[in-house]
Image (cartoon, rainbow, N blue to C red):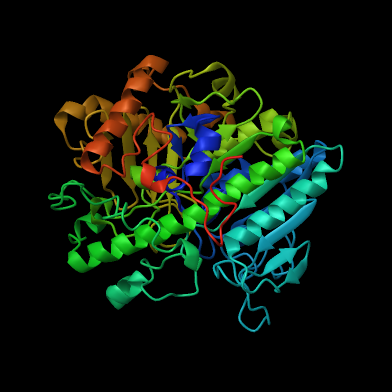
Length: 540
């Protein structure tokens, strides 16, 4: 699992594309229902939407401190005979906020359900721990309850990959199956700061959102010739969005980015790309480790991200949270026995569906359901047999800004400030302040004109209002309500809509030529051997 990675960022990962797209399955409609780190990761661990696991933000009281992690996907798998491990990032605030389970400090807390717990921590000031999840050159880990703060100088992505492969070798020596959750930080922002970082080029109020990931010296500048603008800026220049009057008030107040902000976005995009190339090498090394231990032929490998990222779209400077497509969409690539097909899948899949699918693969669904219902459904039939069509809605939800306590307000509960629904053709969102958005993605994939107030869309709007009331607080099977026929799409129609979507996006943004069907990408980002990254990027 990457952190803050967009679907189109795959262009910077040639080895990953070769292993998992050319020899696997590429889900072209993959979404993070709450496009924010902690809520999305909690959804993966529980198979629940954020309104059910209660982690709707990264800040107290909605962050790690709200998470009941007594029973997760790892717990279910361990009870089914698996050895289980988490390596890398857990939830924002872990190590700093108090545990909901114990009520005490979380720095030395290790949740149940893991054979090996190797989670990066965010220590409290005065704890004596120097390393941090977001320091790429000084990560401190909670290793089965004991703090390891002796990794100074090891690049975070390299360290998480190294530990993951060590555990693979350890588990491969035994007879029981294993589940390793390798949770990388790239391309999320993280220190130490470096010369040339864009935060030096923006006003103080924007420096936090323009923070970038630190990168090893050998990868810096690798994509400078390829990346000449941020992906959220129009390929032919000009304004990002001329008319924002259809957007909610808080977005209408955003200004068109000037020359300095556009240049800062360019720097940010390049540094994110460089950090992803290092992650790409770790994917290749992990696959080689699986082959070396003779586990590859019996292993399913899944690659995804916790959420997407906005890089200028709708005048929005770097960020996520919003229910706009670049924020919601995440890469989802799968390979394994019976899945090495080099095919696209267009059926929708979300973070909670990934959880349900892994449990299905391991025959462990019943163990999770004994504890709590799953909001997602397994996509194993889609993987093995092909697309089924889009027949249920994706619920999107998050918390944007300070909006009071957890009280009922216009249907918004449990800290949420927007709740939306995504179907094959439409994206519908309602905000706690009363505004709404409705996009017809068949003709407006870039979401430039909301149709919420368009009389021609009144019947569609009526359908969504009814569905919204049904699904806004759904749980378990109630999240799988079959859509009205007008909102469904059979496999043929879904394929047409999906290809039209990416064609429209490419026409406006043209992100480095990575369009539907492209698995090799531009030749300028093909892998090469580097002095300090000599094993990276070479397909196993």
